Amino acid sequence: GLRGEGGGGGGGGVLCVSDHERYADLPISSALSALGPPPRLLPLCCGSLCKYAAVALGSATAFIQHPVKGFPRLKTWDHAAGVVCVLEAGGRVSDLHGAELPMSGARAFVPGGGGVAVSNGAVHEDLLAAAIGAGMWWRGPPAVEMESALAATAARRRLRLPFLVCIDRDGVINEDVGSPGVTDAADLRLLPGAAEAVAALNAAGAHVCVVTNQSSVGRGLLSPKGLQRIHDKLREELSRSGAWVDGILVACDAAGQGASRRRKPGPGMLEEAMSHFGVGPANTVFIGDTITDMQAAVAAGIQRRALVSTGYGATVRAALDAEGVDLPVTLVPSAGQTAGVPPDVLPVTVHRDLEATVRLLLKYGQLNVPPTTNGNGVRSC
Image (cartoon, rainbow, N blue to C red):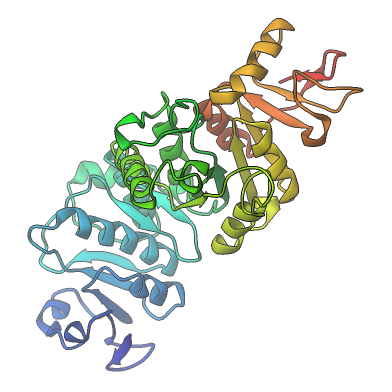
């Protein structure tokens, strides 16, 4: 809950934000006096997002980070999120005890919904850069402060790019092991560059949501607990590269009659993702490896969709190779089919893999660059 102490907008008023009653009465007067009298000061005493929301709503202009022994990574998340929130509010950053907090593996939440991934040097270049660039102060080595200041402009720009990227799982993020799919966490292996691609999306402020059909659960070949273990393994593998996904949506029913609207090619899961993250089709991207994925995107009204040539997409890649077409390419409607892709999902851009797709997306803000048509319905980018 929120609890106000002292005066309001001016002077030394303090707004305490906490998700636990005992923090509301934390004695902080002596610590605050050493920092000077900011207009309103917000002590960070817990890991709840309510404190970040307070800054987003303009209730506070600064954070004090309270380090906790034995939990440096958790408090790093708090610190990173606090920096972003303070940036948005135009305040300053400090440490309750003057101690330098660990910087690796941080995760931040941008007020207003966008997420920012931070790991290793990216913390200094992005979050602390933005903090110093906004006129805030961070107690750290001079070299870090200088490096951060130089990167401030780019950091602030990157923090303002919230959008939603939905990604199929098997054959896009991890290897497709064939029917009935991954049924044991030990068999889940990330495709080369996939974790780095997700990390790049995180760093750009995108929401990343996995959208996957897993009929093996509905057919009794995989238990819900087994599926959870697989997704725990997926998150663990991604985290090794400083990446994460903000959500995983699964359709467990089998294909055929009686399949729900959630199961791709139905748009249900994509609509759920857009509703959850508050993002419309115009600001949503879907990346998959099957025609079914592309049909789901079309049904959900998502115009920016990419077909990767890993997993089942290898068949499209083989057809394009036979036509002598290099990737990436945009397939456009033609009289029949183009590279085995039915007209109802065209136009669609075909990329080598997830990493190549994300690279182009972040460079141009779209999935294809101005193409040229070679006369057979294939446009080379």
